[in-house]
Image 1 (cartoon, helix red, strand yellow):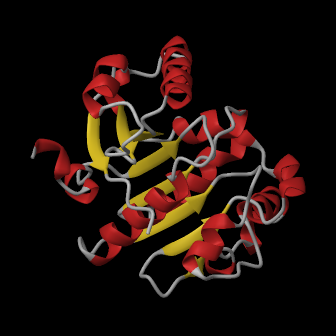
Image 2: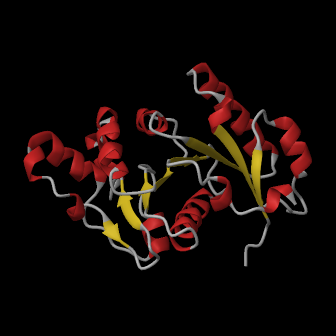
Amino acid sequence: GEYSHSLSIRLIMSKNIVLFSTKGGVGKTLIAANLAVTLAQDQRKRVCLVDLDVQVPGDMARMLNVSPQRSMADAVNVLKKQPQAFVKSQFIIQSTLGVDFFPAVLRPQQSSYLEPSRIKEVFSFLEKDYDYIVVDAGKSFSDIFIAALNQAHLFLLVVTPDVISIYQTKWILDTLQSLSFPLSMIKGVLNRAESISGISWQEVKVSLPVDIISLIPSEGK
């Protein structure tokens, strides 16, 4: 039906796609990684996957089976102190899945070196080389998150069909509207949509003031 089309088809007009959730364990990192790989392999696009989760770094790297040695925090430090010595390829790692990977930090302690004011500069040099930049923005409503959102063309909120996820999603939508982000650039992705114990997607749709553009079934296996 209308909601079963792949995300890659729906997002073909977007360049910077930021995924976010206020609740852990909703599948956001897995969805971000699969979206990036689908765009790269099925759509033949140049894709950079950015892990902007500074609280729990490393999950996405393990998912891609890569071991980055340098991060966005390191890149920002070089750009700040020796911009002429900056070499992009030293910070971005290639995966065997066809996407390039760029972690914000390697350890949570590095987050203090990642200045939000530098995020725009980082995105500017990425945009020159990629058709899509897919960002896992974590679940922390921080200055770094807001800086990334200011560079987004599309904002995907990952929701699960449970009361807590829906309540927190409503809160984040209210907060984003108060910061003058238009609801038109925010879309919902409902994960575990057919969970037997969950709220129906029709109820979720009625509860949230944004379009639900994809229903992902509950298939843990």
